Length: 179
Image (cartoon, rainbow, N blue to C red; front, side):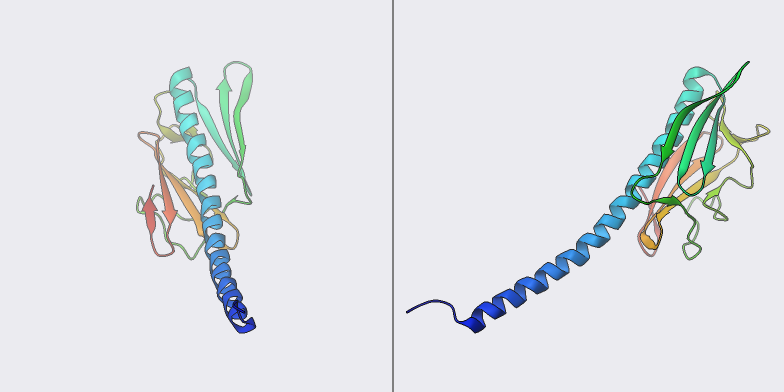
């Protein structure tokens, strides 16, 4: 009679369980990283939409960041007030968070808070595409996002004030990597 012995089957099951356990650990890291990428892309898309809309409509577009996870673009309508043109809530538990253990991005635009625009109380895209503070002075800045408790999900989007261009960064665990 041929077949497998009980010991051979137990060894095969043990090896399968070890491989499955390793796969689960790997997938969890990938999921956290994908959640971070999603928040980064939402943030970058909103910033690019704000710049492009300001240029196309020849209007001032203000940015609002509301903790823990909300970003808005608001068009200044003259006369008559304001219109919200985009309202984004970060997905998958991501929040506007600045992890103090992680250094500033290579751009060095600020790491004092989750949304650091050189201390500007208000930021907006001007009709020429520049990102400025409330008085019209160009300002550079950084928006940091992370899924709380998962540093591998840390991401940053920097904006150069004079051009309004956004640059995305991913934290690798030891350094920022441009995307």
